[in-house]
Amino acid sequence: MLEKKVCMVGAPGVGKTSLVRRFVESVFSERYHSTIGVKVDKKVVAVDGRELGLVLWDLEGADELTPLSLAYFRGAAGYLLVVDGTRATTLEAARELRDATEAQLGSLPHLVLLNKTDLPDAWAVGDGAILAGAGADVRRTSAKTGSGVEEAFLALGARLLG
Amino acid sequence: MTETTPTSPPPTTHRGAADEDLALLRRLLVTPEQAEVDALRLRLDDPRIHARDVSGVLAEAIVLRAREDDELQRALQPIFARTLRLAIQEDPALVADALYPVLGPAIRKAVAHALRDLVQSLNRILSRAFSIRAIRWRWEAWRSGRSFAEVVLAHTLLYRVEQVFLIHADTGLVLQHVAAPDVPTEDPSLVAGMLTAIQDFVRDSFGAGERETLDEFEVGELVVWIARGPEAVIAAVIRGTPLPIVRTTLEEQLERVHLTHREALQAFDGDASAFADTGASLEDCLLVEVGDRSPGGGA
Ligand SMILES: Nc1nc2c(ncn2[C@@H]2O[C@H](COP(=O)(O)OP(=O)(O)OP(=O)(O)O)[C@@H](O)[C@H]2O)c(=O)[nH]1
Ligand SMILES: [Mg+2]
View 1 (cartoon, rainbow over the protein chains, first blue to last red):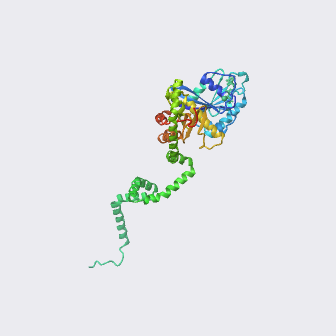
View 2 (view 1 turned 120 degrees about the horizontal axis):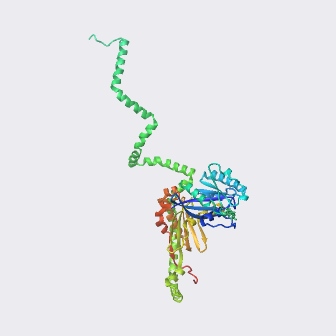
View 3 (view 1 turned 60 degrees about the horizontal axis):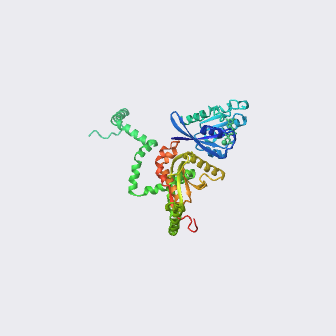
């Protein structure tokens, strides 16, 4: 079976771990356990009738690219850049992360996820237009309700095979 | 007799006509050759054509000359030496990677030689201790209702390599995985990923260079031994206290894989099917050793 390494990146607390848990185990928890280092998970998806193993590296949250996160990034085929839709600063962090990553590793397939879309009253990032440049695919997700989560991982999977 | 050598040159008109005729005659006679001569001159003048011509016979020429004497080798030797030095200066990793499968065995052979005597004397001590305690173990087996073999194994299992992972160095994806019988296993992809992440972490945290990495650590009652090559990593999950032979074997098999699968390793894009045939190499690493775990004291 084909396997691809995919990184989850973004500022602390934006919901990277929650998105992975929703996608892999179909569960959600309100409790916040900040990730230390990295946690590796895997889910097999079907893309165009082909099996693809997504090996998900859920990195610890960071506002900027550290040497460590760069080391974790090595060998990734693509990544999901996660923003907390209720905190505008995480949008800015995402942009810096992406710029730094592309400067170091070149352009990789990625999607931008504006997460926590189940909290519309607290929404603070609009449509995330500053990340939409360069043809990036910007979507809304909620790890809590599951809205848009599976679709996002599948869309990245399709990009990795296409 | 009147026709003597003319004292005065012939009339110029005459001579001019003769020259023209001659030129015409030459053209008629030698035009085909002329074309060939021109082409030849071009060949000699144009270094590119020249090079192409020489390239056609270069290999044969070298073979011929090498058969006669070793002048050629002597001429090329300093050039090779200089080229190699330059290549190493420019990119040491490139040369190290290329030499990796060759150098490993040579170094190991030297070390193994030094260790052999030590190992032999150790073996002798172990086997003697084994026979003295055998009686006690029979007694223990009888008393506890377990089989003698079970008791012996419990006392004497030095180590057992339970799982071996072949991991792509760059992506941390698993290329091949084998396990000893009856060993419960996790999804190898996850283990391979975490092992790689741990290495990344250690390298970053302790500021170690690209080539220095964690090569063993403990997880509960298991130890993990890791051997790294330029393109792939072998990790063994071991119960007990492994002997150095385990590391040697891991390194040997890793070099083998680099030798036999170099291109597949470099081109790896997530499809591990090219590594299906490395299973036998990994199984060679599933070593088990029994002996006396505690030669001095009780169990
Ligand atoms: N309402 C809501 N809460 C969410 C959602 N996703 C995550 N959370 C909450 O946000 C908090 C942080 O979630 P995590 O998934 O741990 O965030 P993270 O990005 O992995 O954090 P770090 O590992 O520290 O970088 C937790 O309390 C989650 O319950 C969401 O879609 N909606
Ligand atoms: Mg997390």
